[in-house]
Amino acid sequence: MNITIDGAGRLVVPKSMRDHLGISAGSELSLEQRGDEILLKPVRSEGSLENVDGFLVYDDGKVSDVDLVAHLKEGRDDRARNQSGLSVK
Image (cartoon, rainbow, N blue to C red; front, side, top):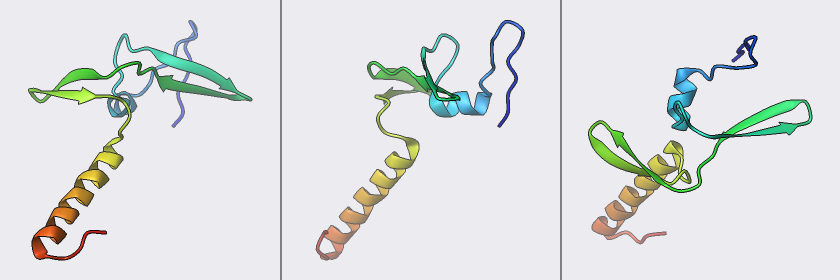
């Protein structure tokens, strides 16, 4: 994805990326130079509560959506094996 820096040196992070990273207006980002690359990362000092579809959701910034889905699936698989009498790994 390519973006353009404006005359004041600002850049716009696309909405889909902001949503995925959980950043919004006022979010703090860490800026690093790595050779000829620039790395921007959200600063996550402590967990936060966020209203998602009317539910308060705690985000500690440590588990990605992919990790969470895999974790939930593994837990369901373990319970299904226990209920069927098969040994758990």
